[in-house]
Image (cartoon, rainbow, N blue to C red; front, side, top):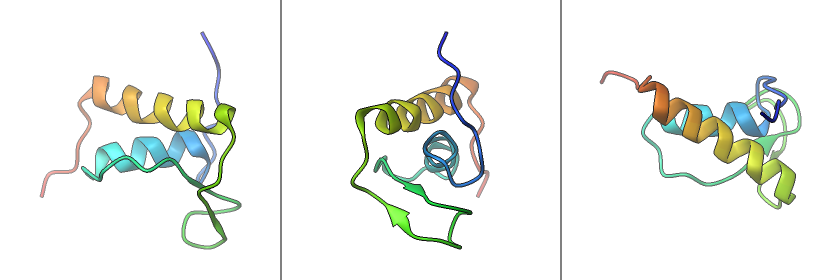
Length: 67
């Protein structure tokens, strides 16, 4: 099992957040905190893997925002 960095704003966190809020998946992360630093969309394969792991983990957990 791969262990991903789950820091706020990181690729795993952003994937999980996109799933939680029902947003279309667009792999990205922030250099520091979400919305407080540069958004990075030109990402490496490892960063994309972390994003998708966060997205997929949240989808499996069924943890979605109730509107």
